[in-house]
Image (tube, rainbow, N blue to C red; front, side):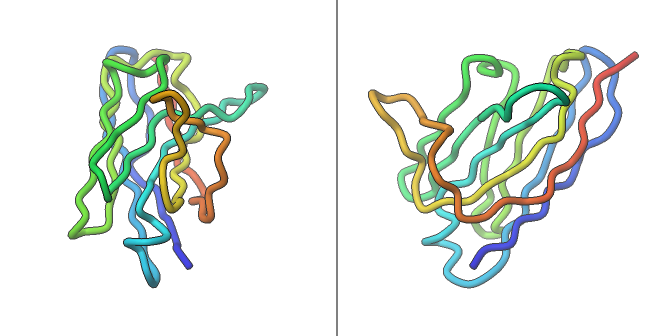
Length: 130
């Protein structure tokens, strides 16, 4: 239904910035890709949800670990979702993935990253090192 391709990863020094992109394609994107989320996974660690953006209502959810440093945004005309990452730290080193779903599932005003996503990209590597 939906194909996702991440780009923008690379090597950056601590304190630097990167802007990741997630391009979506396919049929019925406004329905099956209404919600776009960003995840990351570092070696030896569990997959971590970072943000979820909802096109239908404009809501954006962030994980506490990145709130204030990472900013998610969407260009619906281009079917592209972005993740602006500032003040990067070595612990931000991971493979970053985007995923698509119908909605951002939230309980008590907080996003539930364990929700089902219908589509996943293959990831882009982000390495923060001097």
